[in-house]
Structures are given as structure tokens and as C-alpha cells.
Length: 137
Image 1: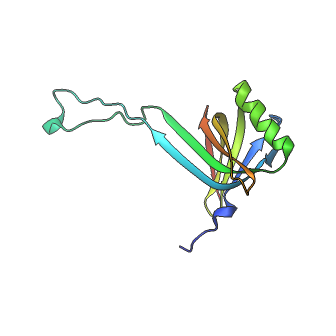
Image 2: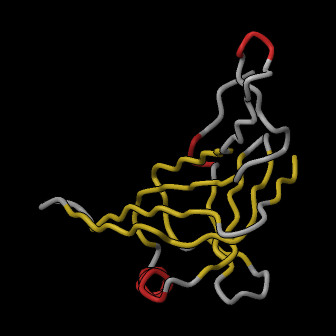
């Protein structure tokens, strides 16, 4: 497998809740992680005391993080509004040569920073808030 360009990993927001996805920020770094909690069903009758797990049980979640610069003042205002209102909105993450992850997420962290000789940057963290879909490319 050849290396893929990180800039092709794209995060988009359904800005109006109508299914129209637009990129709202120039993300320089992005990270996606999936987690699934397990349910331990081990008891005194478990073979050789090995742990047993309930198949298909537990809570699944997806986390997205990114940092970069906002595309414009409107994008900055929209992200801040969603964060302060605690609004859950659909987001898409497009992973080149892999697929598209889509679903409802809430902004759970929003940080701003700046260097004396540079632009204002932000860090964003999203947590899944419902069913996440994956469509392979």
C-alpha cells in the first residue's frame, strides 16, 4: 500500500441539518478513533477462569479531533455557536481510499491559540451522539 496524503482526509459539517455538507475549517491535523466497551460475563463456571465477553454487547463510540485554522469568520461563528449551544449535528469524515464516516457528533472541546507571528488556530474535539455509518470507497 502506498502512503496517502494527510491533507486529503476531510472533515465536513452539515451546517443546516438538511444533509448539505460543507468543509468549515482548514484542518491541519485530524484523528479518528473508535472504541467499544466490553461486557464481562465471566463467572465461577468459566473454563480455566478465562474471561468471557458478551458478543455484540457494550457501548460503541467514535471520537474525532482536529486542529487548524477557520476558513472564514462565518465558519468560526458557526462552530462557536454549535459548541456553546451543545448542538448535535451530522458530520462527515472522508478518508481517501478507505471510505466515509458519517453521523451525529457533538463538539465537546474547542480551544483557540496563536503564535505572535502567526494566525489564530483552533483545536476541536467531537464525540459521537448516535448511529455512525461507514461507506467504503
